[in-house]
Length: 308
Image (cartoon, rainbow, N blue to C red; front, side, top):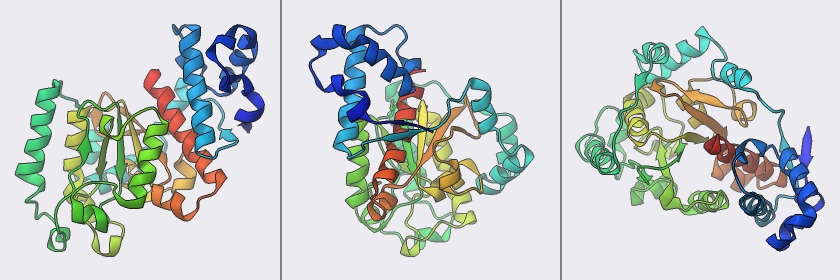
């Protein structure tokens, strides 16, 4: 496994951009070792310097001294990862996403083409006419309010969690409180503001005692999330935590086995790549440098995917 240490490998990146000519060889070498070579095609030297410097400074801000990187994946390997499991994965998706999920997996639904105004109207209609008054499952009985999701309808990145917690149920917004604060820091580290991305959950009502949603509850809500994705058309989906990854992807493996690997969201076309990573609440409980490094590696992979 290759380990990138910003302090040892990229000392020149904390200096002025004007020093580029004297550090070009080191810069190019480190850029390749960081696995970011695929996004620099067509960029001028100053832009490449600025982006890499931002990565290094963000690593240090998050307290990450070294980032473990997985082996490089070619396009064939990426496709294989998304289709891993074959019929088993399709059957699992069908179980999670409803009776026609298997058909959607084999013949994906083309995403509609909407302008920004149409997206806003479609999301508002879905929320106001369907989600807010939803009584499809028993979760409606204990909710204070539904938590539809929020963010930019043109967001390139969509974060998907498992379901609302107490704070979210009270405020009607996804990812607030301590977990939300950490997620916002991660979003800012990626070079975005919270308002520039979209955040949603698999289920729109809080499960009792914050338990994992049951299969019937997920099935009742699955169409809402699918339609949000169809409307927003994100370039990348990042699932937060094991339950969200399992529910979105229809897999049985735990988060430690599937994080850091690219998958595909079933049922839409063009396919949306999905990167599972740890939930912010897990990081708050297990706030180790290793865990933070793994999450940051996942987020940087998402940035690379955006540029590909």
